[in-house]
Image 1 (tube, rainbow, N blue to C red):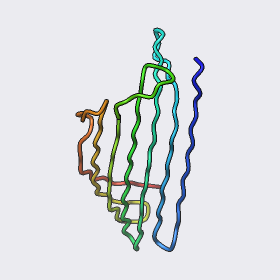
Image 2 (cartoon, rainbow, N blue to C red):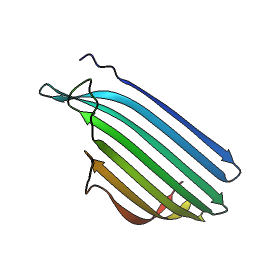
Image 3 (cartoon, helix red, strand yellow):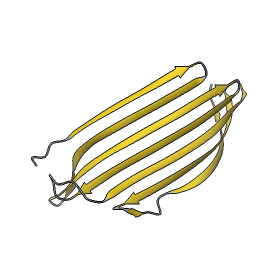
Image 4 (tube, rainbow, N blue to C red):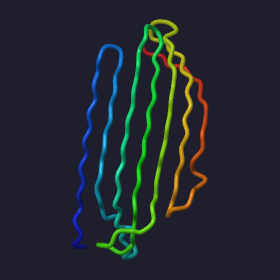
Length: 133
């Protein structure tokens, strides 16, 4: 196999008072050995961003992820159809007592494989609690 692997990642976050904002980006290509003499070249990128605000006992958070890739079983040749993963999530966390928090959130995911929507995505509400000692 003579194809090169390459990639880079960059990210930054900033905090000012009770507000935190972060964003990151990654891009690259790689070769995956599928076995039986089949190798797949994958070219892709992903962007992530998030924001969090803390006000007393309440924390509000929002995050997004958007990734796209093209894969090909012809090493050295990029694929022609997109695979993608897009997700958005939001949550509210309340500090109930010292070391105990309650959280309610929502997330939605949309995925495509070879340019076609898949059934792997969807959306959900969630309710939970965390404890730390």
